[in-house]
Length: 396
Image (tube, rainbow, N blue to C red):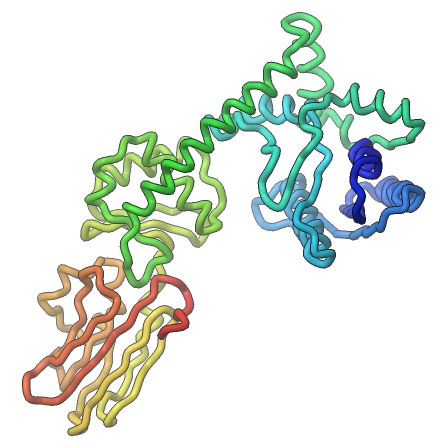
């Protein structure tokens, strides 16, 4: 409410108030939504209220709080796009910041968790992080503006509320009355350090990434060897964020970094259906099932093409030789080039056969456009184009 009043005083443009009713607290939640409507209209603001049944839309393994946050942010962003706005302003304040830093610390965190709540993370901005709850309530009293308190904020079953109502008051009274200020300063310093680490990680990623079919992303082990464990952990976090993968906790991130440094052939389960694999000097992120994407094909036509989810094969066969397209596993013959193909691709790697003989096998050497004329003078040509993503690129 304080944020809305301040905006109304200093912002000359249109203000759109968006409120999400989560379908958790029953009638009191609906009453809060009605209160927000009345205040917004009294202040001459446009109001959008969304109703989301969080318990029914909670994902497997997701807490009720996590689901509410995800769905709330999705609704707010939808309103932003509808209005053509650049930013969504959230009313988190200094008390929330102190609670969040302690919450992350007690749960187990690294430097990233000590950042607390970021003041800016597009499209969200939090302009009240430097103000305490007491300061904001005093401001509203001076302005003669009513507000309501979310009743779940006093429910001691939640760890965050125990920190808010039991731990922090005890620290203020017996340890340091300025603990909130110190925790906010720690969060700002952690944000600065993390920003620096992320910038360095982006540089690492440019060097680490190497094209490889059948993966969402692939790293070159020759570059990995030059990184420390801390640098590698940051690169892992940065790459996961770029792929939109869920956050991995600190211990498992360190385990993965050590495994990557060790090398060899292995797989690592990130979460559910997300995994990494190592082999042939590569670390593949998001291994795609090649066994399912090489359908048997007749290559005896003059020309043609076959497309998979991230590859395409075209051929020219003017003399209509009786060649067929199979996966390497279906062909049953192992060509010498197999050693150059990452092990997670071998089962479904495409080969051209005549009878039981492999006459053409594209081998992976970092190139994504592989051409073969297997037997000189046969006038038979194949081109395999690959894309590491799940869908073919526009060029394929």
